[in-house]
Length: 293
Image (cartoon, rainbow, N blue to C red; front, side):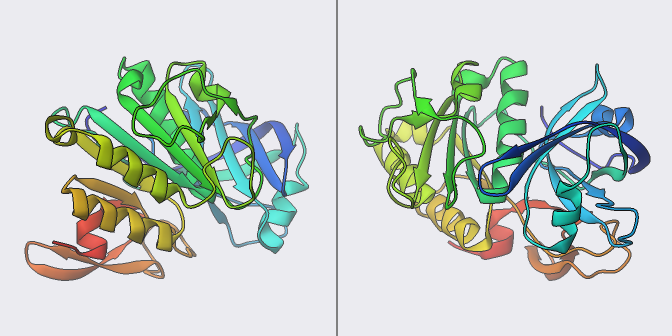
């Protein structure tokens, strides 16, 4: 995966294949949307109609997309009336899906060490990116760090993969990545066993600080999560002078660039310009969004 440019935005009536409840009002939704599955890239999202009675769609990051089967998966948390209505939908029903939307993450061969950082609802794109890297034979070069203030939506167990530089008491990992040979570590403010008792960016700082200069020069950071976490990731990347891409979270109405309700200031060669998170992003260079040296 070298890049994620613009792809067709497709409207599909997607049958719900399964809809699984997870802890803390989190859900994994699987639908059959072959067009979206064919074009989705890590970092892209879809705009879903949560219920036929609700005109306003909701944007959800894509957790997985399988072009062979046409299956697309989403992980989301109930946060309001729309997602509460979505949580009531059942397998066999059909949901209107618009997607995939947005520019995803772009990997660069000159930075073969990939640090993936996900927080809360920023977890799905990191799993999508990690599994995509593994499918391309690059999973062993990735480290996935995830943080959550609620129980993790996936089973957790002690990792079988040694990660130098990570505090020895932080041993919790996601089996869905561990079993693929992709190293992961978890952070939690809830005192979860084996998790780092603090912010996920603290784990990232430990790992980066332990790298020798020649290894640090090969690192690129990819992050998705709440804005304060992204700001911390950008500052951390600036401190260690490593490139960093961030996937922004913004409220969206149309999600196709028409309403301009999700614009953010982004620095470029010609100065600061307002960019639409939905179609110009959601992935941007961290320095362009948050600044830094």
